[in-house]
Amino acid sequence: MTDPIGPSTSTIPNPSPTTLLHPRREPFEHGLLPMQKLIFTDPLQALTSLKQKLVSSSIQRVDSAALADALQISLDHARLVLDTLASVLHSESDPLVTSRFDDVDSVGADLLDLILFLYIQSYKRLLPRSHKDAAAVADVWPSTSAFDGYLSALSPLQLVRCNTRRFMPSQADEEAHQLSYLQKHLANILSLLSEPVEGEGEESLVISMEGFEHLGFLIQFEDKGSDGDFLSQAAPIFANSDPDMPAVPVPASQVLGWLLQNIASSLEHVTEKNPAKENGPPSGSDQDVVKASPSVRSPCFIEGVSKSSYVKQASDLKNSSLKVINCHDSVIYILAPLRYATIYGCSDATIVLGAVGKAVRVEHCERVHVIIAAKRVCIANCRECVFFLGVNHRPLIVGDNHKLQVSKKQSPFAGYVITLEF
Figure (tube, rainbow, N blue to C red):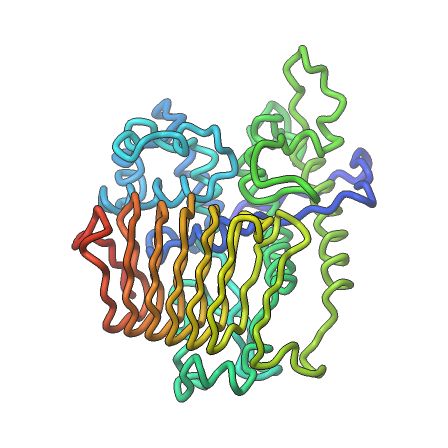
């Protein structure tokens, strides 16, 4: 593996005490695909070779055919990679995002965005813990089903009654885990975004302002949206660049040092705001729990609704993302436009989602009727669920699923879904 880039401490600007760096949740929550050929033992070496191969072919935007040939995967799987990347890109103006469904192949993906997308496919997510001493981290693909092992004897309804959900990772836990992942892999990521110059040692790699902007796929700063803001505007490394002149590339080691300082500060901030709660009292009961995030950057939560009806309209939601978690024996209507939505660990419920512009993920649910109008839908590890789908792209079904029904009336891709199994 290529040696990581070492920080150059002599020229690193001090991070602002009021500027916090956050991971973009979307690639980690909606951008992972269970395809073995996308997971590399040495991602830096493999993706450096892939980048060099595509650059030597004068390819700046990668279509399905070029991707299928480079990764030795089918055209259908290559198209799935491009569609999934489009759903989690940080730039709404990227041609892959704005293109029509039939034009995706001709438009293709930006090479550097694609490289970052492929790199994080080996990301490992936090999983529910059976008790406070259990290992909390396991490979995303293949992921452990919520119904396996300790949890296999319990239905989702029993899980919420025994208060097992307090051992599920919180948003702060997940953010800290994603920051730790970025901290560990940032040197490799910057190496993939950098270009060599004449010279030897760590200063021989430089990163341009354009290359730095691609980091917006993975990170963002406090109070900045997921898109529409230039990442370099928040970075003092490029802050003094003359707007009328091309920005001078910066040594990659300097960028690495500055970002690592910001990540360390952000990790400390997250830890201080989220002290360990394993030995504390349960964080809720069987009563309804509805949480609205104070920042538009984080999702709104509807959690623990039981034996009731619940309605949310556009005026009730200030966030563009929503998570419905551990709701049982209920009818839930979300009649508001969203960008992303997640339904997790629900049972014996009817859930209606309207106008989700990016992606919906339904995971670890039992006997749930889901009515969705969305661009993309992913179904993972569900049992005896019924889906009424109005979607633009083929539904993706992954993991361990049993007795699912997909409506043939509302989905334009009825009878044509993508199923990935381990």
